Image 1 (cartoon, rainbow, N blue to C red):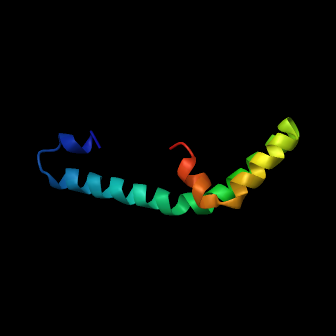
Image 2 (image 1 turned 90 degrees about the vertical axis):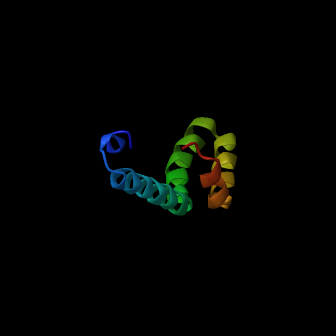
Image 3 (image 1 turned 45 degrees about the vertical axis):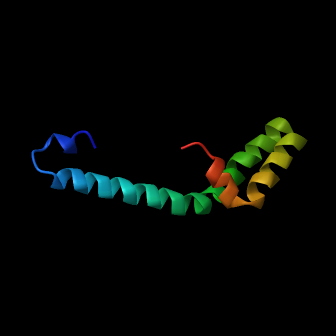
Length: 74
């Protein structure tokens, strides 16, 4: 966004802001859909490394993908 704001006209800034808003909306919509496969893959590793604790963590994360996506770091 900083690169776009160096232009003299404001249409570049508006374009960058619209792109940023669409990217954020896309991440918010897609995060719950993508969290299940990601947790499933990482959960297998957690089960091997942590045993019962890893299994509980995996099952808890898979139980509600929206909650998992909301608490994941950006």
